[in-house]
Image (cartoon, rainbow, N blue to C red; front, side):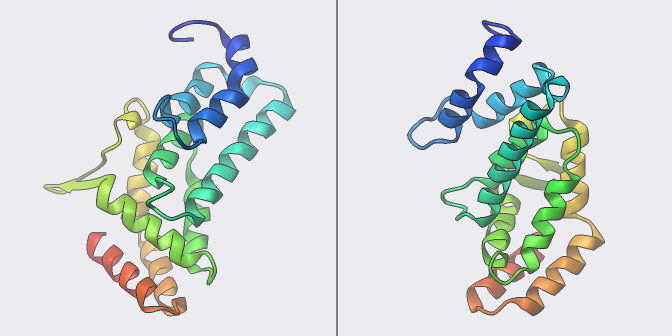
Length: 181
């Protein structure tokens, strides 16, 4: 699969590969690369329990990112990794929008959104793009993210999050997001 070994080898080593890619202290392999290999391995045609395990892993990875500190959990990397495995990012973006308005999850989800807008998103002369190089060949998924970031639905969600915010720090984060969007 792109270097050495085949699908059976990848499936066998996948739990350990994901553990290494998600763990601290390793700068290689890139999470986007490891998770992106799922697509080449045809993971959607695997047995139900294996597909469910992959989806459970991706959901847990995403939930952890939304709840995490941007200095510890890089939402840009994690969203791009998921975008390399999944064809539809709408459920993940919907979860992000939902987290923004929940009192306990909102501050972290807002901080992650500001982090993505600060470092992983550019708008040059009206052209919007995601900057992570691993979005290459995943145009549809990147477009889903870009469309969500510029959607009226996100603006409504951000207004609701602003109303629900209960700290100055969260209010400032949401104001920063408004400026960046």
